[in-house]
Amino acid sequence: MLNPDATDPREGAVFVIRTDSGLVVKRLRREGDTWTMTSDAPGWEPRPVTGQDRIIGHVVWFGPEGVIVQE
Image 1: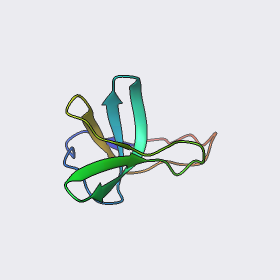
Image 2 (image 1 turned 135 degrees about the vertical axis):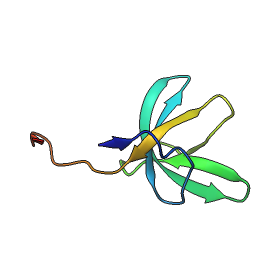
Image 3 (image 1 turned 120 degrees about the vertical axis):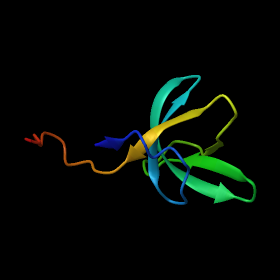
Image 4 (image 1 turned 90 degrees about the horizontal axis):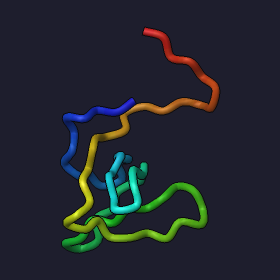
């Protein structure tokens, strides 16, 4: 689940971010004056958030594969 109203970066929080490569779900880390996108999955190199990247929203919940959430 995504909160589209929460677009301010927060240390260690997971966000959906629109990049030049498309949408990604990444954890944000603060490194000095720069925000960096990191991955919990191996094999993805961290990269800085650029001026062209846009935070779409904060990921507030995700569940195991195959789980159906009902309202």
